[in-house]
Amino acid sequence: MAVCMFTGHRPKGLSFGYNERDSRCKKLKKALKKLILNKIQEENTTAFLFGMALGTDIFAAEIVLKLKEKFRDITLTAILPCRTQAARWNKEAITRYEHILAKCDKVIVLQEEYTSSCMHKRNLYMVEHSDCAIAVWSGTEGGTANTIRFATDRHLPVTVLDPTTFGTYKL
Image 1 (cartoon, one colour):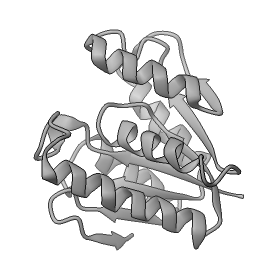
Image 2: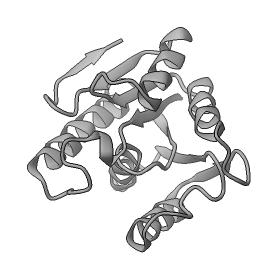
Image 3: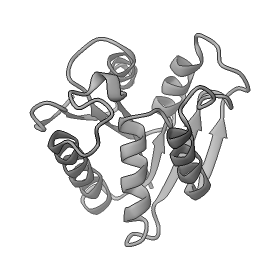
């Protein structure tokens, strides 16, 4: 059983922002689905971890949940940095969040309340419990870049999907 984690930009780091009807968002989701399918069909990945952040994490989770209809042996685990992660989100985002959590095979909560280090701890946890990673990353500094560094420092193969060109490369 191989475990793959997701990391990537939140909406503010994506060219289309929160507009999921934008053609760039549709292209990104299509490319992400292709990468996930490759992990399942070519690399025998059966488990996926994600951090429940807005943007990439949510997109990846929804794709995996849809693929579970065809590939019944795959699992999806949410790694929550804190129980209050979505407390400040808008109602629509919270509803989506709760819907995804309800469909996950497992939910792991790393701590009860938000702290300045909880996202870092979540990312490190996912790296330590994965065999590979898919990253939606434009090359900018931030949480995604840090997570990719954690992964490559631990010799985890990382497949990067550029959210601007939709090209992929491996680290």
